Length: 268
Image 1 (cartoon, one colour):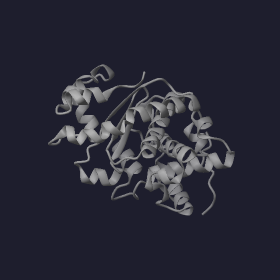
Image 2: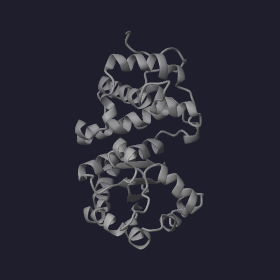
Image 3: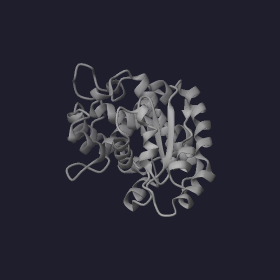
Image 4: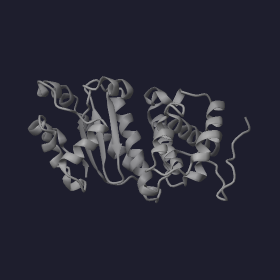
């Protein structure tokens, strides 16, 4: 499938995202309103005045062509699945969201992928974002565990793998800012004292999100940072690539023994 020509949808229905989302109903078991509400939370645009003038710079940058090229490269590199890819404008009217994300975001499923982009994004930023999200798709497809059974450990490894894939392809300049939030000794401590004891928290548990993103109880982006740390340590210790790691279990990557004993990390 590859790139879906959502640029044509936008030219026809920009002012009505619900009409745009009607075209997505075949990809979800949901109504257009339910789809839009979900995508909006993850960065999809809200119409603004003079919307076509707002849209023109994105159309001129043509991320549809950029992503098509990147998709073919990664599909071959990772043996990835053939999925539909949808590109929409980012909701840059939300200043807090824009500041937090750099005016771009993505959403990956096992069988489809969404990118939300703004006119400020460079080509390499767009490629790096797609690399992160398509790595998610490949992990979900190759690591044969039902998404509804995912635990905190599965999620942080998923995120760590995707961000390391960005490093492999585009270097540290195009990685997320959170990767440098903590030094190694802090990450080991966070892993041993907070994440490891909660590793089996299920995806549908509110605590899962608190531990992933941080909260008033937990350090900021703790799950993401620990996941990247665990993936980095495993890859560099074993001298393999993220492509090889896509099928490995989360417990193996985290150096956890399958008998449930404590993680094999260095003493503090």
